Structures are given as C-alpha cells and as structure tokens.
Length: 450
Image 1 (cartoon, helix red, strand yellow):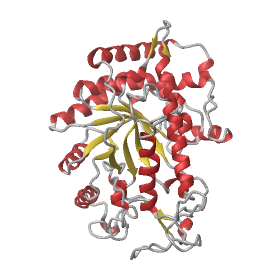
Image 2 (tube, helix red, strand yellow):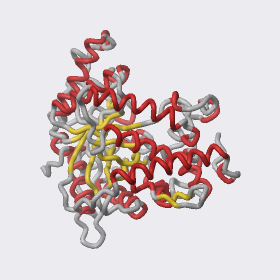
Image 3 (cartoon, one colour):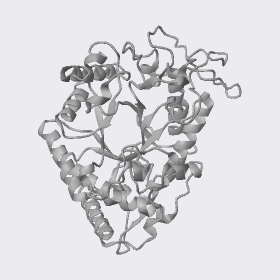
Image 4 (cartoon, helix red, strand yellow):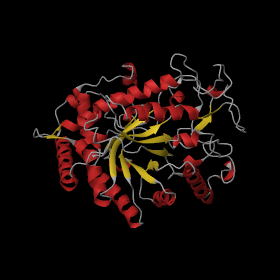
C-alpha cells in the first residue's frame, strides 16, 4: 500500500530534474506546433470500435471469439489460426462501418500488421501509448503482495523518461519505416487508477469516499509529478514521427477524477514557473460505463458524468472530449447490480431488455435501443445544448466481442436464435456462438438513428 500523502515530503533532486525535462519537452513542442485551432462544436460526430489487445495471441481465445473454425478451442494457439482470427475480427468490425478503431500501440510486426488491417478497411487508428516494465528503474515495481493489484503496479513518477522515449521512438520509427501511419494517440489508459499508476489513491480509498472527488493538493501534485512529464515526453516523441497526429489524454476510468486533468493546466516547476500542459494535446479521453437498470438512469448517469468532466477540462471548447470507451451494460460486471438486460417488456425475468421507467417515457429497451438513446439523448443533446454545449467529437464502443458466462445472466432469453448456453452475458456486438452481428446493435454503434 502506498502512502497517498508522500508528496508532502520535500521535493527530491530527481523530481526536480524530471520536472525540468518535462518543461523542456513541453516548450519544444509548443515552439513547433503552437496551439490547436478550435474545432467547430457542430462538426460531425464520428464513431469507432474498441477491440483491445489484438496484438497479443492469448486475448483471441474462446469464449470471446466464436467457437467455430478458425476459432476451434482445440487449436486456437496455432499461428495460422491466430492471424485468421485477427482478420475475422477486423472484417467483422468493418461490417459495422465504424470510422475509427482503438487498441494498444507497439512497433512489433503484429502491431504494424494490425495497422495495415485497419487502414485496408477504411478506418483510422487511435493507438494507446503506455509505459512498460522496462521503462522503470530497479525497485520501482510494487508487487501484487505490496499493492493488491493483480499484476502489480508502478508509480508513474518513477519512470525513466529517457528509456521510455528510446523504446517508443523505436516503435514509432518501425511503423513509419513500414509505410504506415497512426491518425491519433491516447497517452495512457485509465491512469487515474492506482493499479495503472501508483501515484493515485487506491480503489479502496475512492470507495471510502463513495467515488467522489476527495484528493488533497498534495495528492494532486503527486499525480501531476508523474503524468505531466510522461505526457510531455510522449508528445515530443510522437511529433518527431507523426507531426499531424491528434493526441489526447488517457480516458478517465472515473468521471470524478476529472480535476486531475484540470491540474495539468497550472503545473509549477522548481523555479516557480507555471506550465499549461494541456496546450500539448488536442482532446481529453473519457470512459463511460453508466448504470442502465433503466434507460433514464443511463441517460442521467452519462449526462452528469460528461457535464462534470467538461467543467474541469481546460480549453474544452477547443479541445473536445473523446469518449474512447463506453458500454451500457459493462458496469454490471463489477458494480454488484443484476445484469441490466434480462427482462421482458413487463419487467419480469426472461428477456433481453432493461426495465421501463414510466415517469420518463423510456420503454424497456434492448442493447441496441439503449445505444441509440445514448447517442441521441446524451451525446447529441449535450453537443447541441443551447445553454451549455459540451464539445464531444468521437464515441468508441467497447467492445466488439465482449461477453462471457455468468450466473448474472441465468434469466436472459435472447430475442434471436442462438446456440449459446444459458447464463451467457453479452455486452459486445456479436453472438459469440456464430460471430454474427447482433440485430440492430451494429447500426446503433455506428450512429444510425434506427
């Protein structure tokens, strides 16, 4: 367990050097590219699909993939079938007519191949840039026993920026050498979580405060001391190879942590100079997993979250929010609620609808209906608000093939023919037993009104 108040101790020389390097990186980028022009709030909304970890073989096994050739459980580890599965997934996503695809980034042959698959299908790539174990000095790692995190964790403030930049610049160079490009980069993934960046309070501390903002100035500065230099170094390296790429901050896992981004606009270095690190980026990442027991709950939850984030994101009229992950059912996996979409039109178990809300006029809806309402009554309503418009430019659905067995779904009865066993929850876009797109879901994800 990390003491969240450690930044109250005197600043160490290494911290001052890290801050100085970050400021130099930021100044270099400011000089080259200046500040991004303000995008129009009425610009067309774009849609994308997240299917994470396509570069690693183990993530493409049953049950997340169809148990049909080339997805047979008996031989799914064979290299030939691995590539066939990747192509099948990308072909499936292409059927959705999404404009964007999101996944992690690397310079390996698999990552370059993934870029080729994405671009060959007319999509643009949002690549997540993250730290690796090799970027940290010995002793920085906090084991599972120390941290309580399944894979352990690192404090981002202890990263060796030179090692990090050397690694990612080799990866960026490999992509450019292959004749490929990346349209946009996301700097980190959910780095407001302790298990992704140990400079943050733990999940238990957030839960103690009912997932509402509680951080002291010292805790905020602990986070900033890690993320600001990491952001500046990332931007400087990316601009060397892809100067026209858009760059956004990591997607918040919790809307309540949005003030961490606000703090990036007023970072004071050891000499007292203030740097606005948000000038380096083109937008802000956001992850939304609303509670969808009723469609009204989903609309209110997502609307409140986005409005709260917008109030804390500096220059948000010029730097839009990118919703890089969202799903109407996903939060049911971890929040202790029953599976939202398991009722019939009368609110009784034995269907694939959520519950109606008589006071709002929202009827019981299936997954596709909830997605359409989110696009129209949350995203478009906020974008077009006369009183206080919220600048949102992209929406990524998470995930293409998400689903799995759970007792939560023992009462689900799907409205289409399927050979799935009972108790199989689906919050993705396909029926995992066939690989077929779910009725209406693909069109809804891509922004169709009906």
